[in-house]
Image (cartoon, helix red, strand yellow):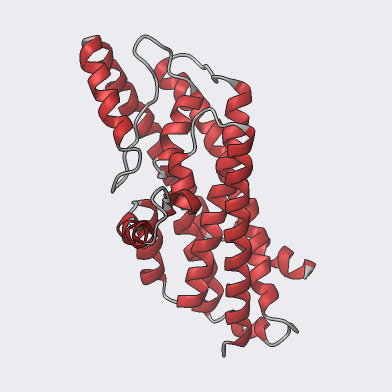
Amino acid sequence: MLNMIKMDIYRMFRTKSLYVIWIIMAVAVIITTYMSKIDYDAIQEEMNRQQAVVEEEQAEEQVNLGMTVVLPTQPGEMVTVFDLFYANTQAKFIALFLVIFAVIFGTADINSGYIKNIGGQVRNRGHLVLAKMVSLLAYTILSMAGYVLLQVVANQIIFGKIELGNTKEFLLYLGAQTALHYALVIISMALAVVIRSNVISMVIVICLCMNMMMILYSAVDNLIHKAGAKDFQLIEYTVTGKIAMLPMGPTGSECVQAVVIALGFVIVMILAGSAIFRKRDI
């Protein structure tokens, strides 16, 4: 098992798409930071009354279709690294890059035919999926840490000042979001392994990041509401829903709930992916 993990990690860092995605993400973060500064400067010029109306409208619709990066910074306040981290993660902007690589990496050995060389040499082919899980954990942690460092640099370049924000809340939010993003990465990898089609898998995971599943969630909610559970909201128990709805200053219980949901999805997807991959003819 350890050798499989080492092999997968080595293969991951030898994959050109890893560095291409990181480079594109870096450029995209700088662009979104610059665009956020333009929006922030425009808001500064608006009247306080108009700003209050905009904030009220945004609060009424926390999760919408598509991807919208909105700064939580109030007029007159300094834009912090935490503000931009929250805006980009809440919109699932960073998640988009993570899931794309997860699909590519998840099926790379299958599409290249390399899996046929090693598939027959292991007793349990499900362990190959577990090895991918460990590799993608390293990828997720490195990507999130790299994004934070990149955001610090972008703030210095574009805003001319670095202000992290509330350190305790930032670390809590970073930890919870890293767990949720990792769960989304594992979901994407498992879908790719099961479906065995990069195109279909890519479409599904992009739709997840774009909140397209809201249509399905609403349909399920309506059925459950008719059954008597009026306050039930399915999105509150999904990974993408938690990513979007986790508050900027999460409490300990909210962080625990996010981690539990992430862990639950990771376990289910790994068990399902391993079982299918173990029985499938390669």
